[in-house]
Length: 69
Image (cartoon, rainbow, N blue to C red):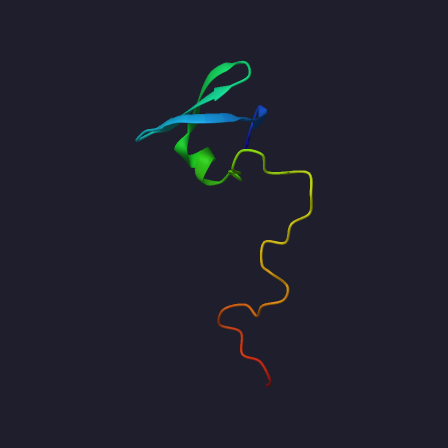
């Protein structure tokens, strides 16, 4: 799923080119500029996008963070 100025685009990636990512959506083929694709959230098929999943596991320390003062 890509979030663009026209709203989210959901589909299957067909080709990654120099300027555009070509996708097949439910409404037909879509060419998304690479600048938008790089700033978008790309999920594997079947991924639940409506759930809250932390980006960083909460049970592990962040890289570079020193513990204990």
